[in-house]
Length: 397
Ligand code: SR1
Ligand code: MG
Ligand code: MG
Ligand code: MG
Image 1 (tube, rainbow, N blue to C red):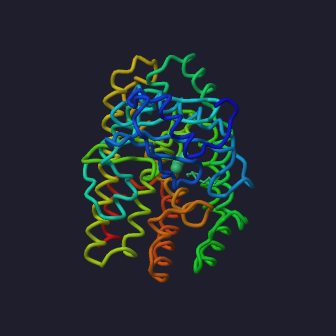
Image 2: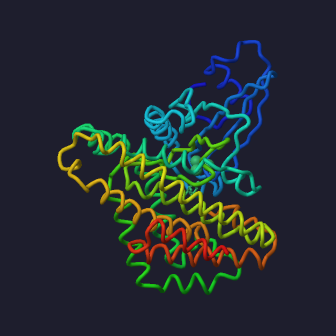
């Protein structure tokens, strides 16, 4: 294989056979296309003894939209860079990259049989206790380790330039901060929420806050982020997590990554009354609040513990780290609000809301998510972690 071309099923097998040392030349291999994400093609290649690998190939456009929305296939190289960098800092929290082929924009990744995607696990009601805390600790390691707290000044600037990812950041800028705040043809406003969306588009105070968040997304290169850390980008198993799908990675504000996790737990929280009977929905919603509490505790405690050892002048001044973490919390709430809004009325939705079978139930859950997104943005500077959790518990009861 030389020039770039879209993989056939047989190409995916060839790629796996050539680059995965675990298959010998004679092992019979089966292949299935498993990708249901928005952007790429994903294959699982399996030997007869059950061992497998994942082949992921970036297309020169957005898969779920088609060739009408071109997007650089070199995002595969960005994904490889982020997985390698994060994998060094937190191997137990990052999916292992086995090989990257730049010419084919293809990645070979470990296959985690027996693990589930977190969003699916939450939707079917699996017990995922311990996962949120583990993800919080993972985020503390990768965000701290790529920040000014850990890196010498010149090294940090080189990293920011090396991992600029302009095309994917422009996509995020469009789908997060542009389209959902106006009547744009790319939006997918759910049936029944037309008036809610129109009311949001006319909310000047909200748009003022979102403009501030957008500037922070654009300008505040705090750490190397995953950049699209929703619950569909995390494999889980018994209190463990492995983060994958890092093609949107860039140097940005830490609260963007933490906020997307919080928002996706809240999308599940908002959708639960559409999926379960009242008692079961209430119990699962309490579990989501506990997930948010554990995520933040895992992140903030591990971050402060690492930052206690920083040699960086000024950043080690007493009280500075606590102030910094408090600011990350405010960003977390603001960016969580933008994720809730764009997943409800923007171009890319989530199963937690959109797959609710009953029309009236679904509409009520989508309206709740839109409302919660707006509240989080407006109250980001006044709601403490404890305050948010008690507020959500009252909402769930
Ligand atoms: C048009 S791109 C929409 C979304 O798909 C990806 O999974 C990212 O979440 C992106 O924002
Ligand atoms: Mg995906
Ligand atoms: Mg992806
Ligand atoms: Mg993704």
